[in-house]
Length: 495
Image (cartoon, rainbow, N blue to C red; front, side, top):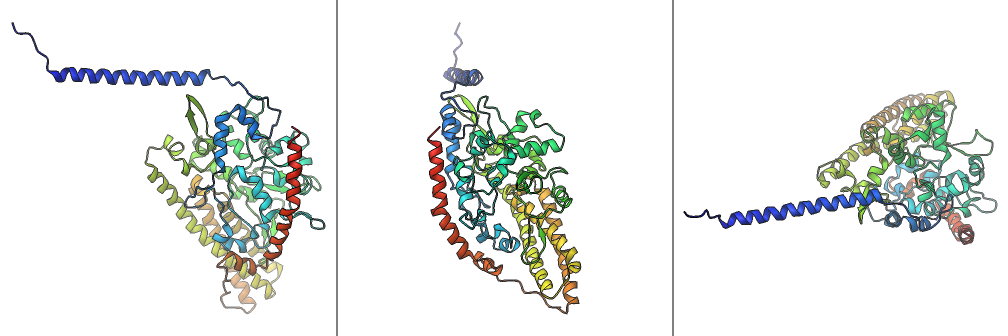
């Protein structure tokens, strides 16, 4: 009887199948080993950290992976369609902002921030902080340092918030040297996320909330909310103190915050052209984030701006804090399965449409300020201008709320579109009322739109002496700033 003969292909299939099974088992074993290593990892400090240690390099001795990724924030080469982390002169890009902020420090200088590592350098170099010198003290308070350095955490460990907020910003300048980093968000002993800035704790307390009960996932956003928020300096709470306050008592929306400010007549400055009592939005990023779909679904700031990564079997948070658009694979594609090009196009589509309307609102506001000045020049009274100035204030607050929150067109595109739309309505209302006032004064022509094609022309139009401002700042850099650095180095050497 003839034996059954198997064809050679059968053995090849058997061999191939065996190889695949062995390979998959090996991958499974490797994965189990990695997961077990992550679970069994025990934090063993290499250096003893003092409470509130401000030097990031010291933390780096215990957390080399996190520190090495943090150092990457020195890279300022990334540019997206709108901004990025490179230095961008926003007044040069959009000179209309100079007119919108006439009479306020932002009309002098407004540049795109380069990221956490450069926070101290950027604030000392900007013209907005002034140039302290004998007989010419800085116009800005110490409170301006609040979000610029872990040295603030160190100082708040030695003094009360009121003491820190008191005085001009140059008095504590020599104490501020370390870039934003570890101690701003982490407890020195436990490494747990912690709130180190009193303003956030106080804002929650006024809302009847206990921030200590926040979950770990909530904390991954709240540590960011210590700084990336709308705020103001309350100069009436304690005499002689610019007390840092978050205006959240009535809610997070533009209207809620406006109602809070209006409740006691708060004004950041009076516009030098229109004489409108103005509000200046800072950077309400946490507020707009919470009103968008990601915030509503429980996504944290860190999920996108500091996503998890693995090296050597260890899972850790990437401290290269940056735009998710420069890290789509680890940020966006963890949840979204679309191609990177598609996701990028989706973001730019939202930004394009929102900025189109935002630009229109800017033009309307420039016209409103210029037309208001014309009305004053023709003898308009306070009573005639009151409703007009209120509309200008409301309109520009909505523009600034949208423009100052750098990620708003992505974080909450529907909400920001609504806010800008309402801003356009208020601007048009102001201009209609202005047309009536101008007609009553015998002026029935179109008020000429100013030549503000460049930053230089816009600053000349509102009457800024930029040559003097830059000269004063140069003197400050060559004298006071060098003295600050020397004092700071001397203090650092005593650690």
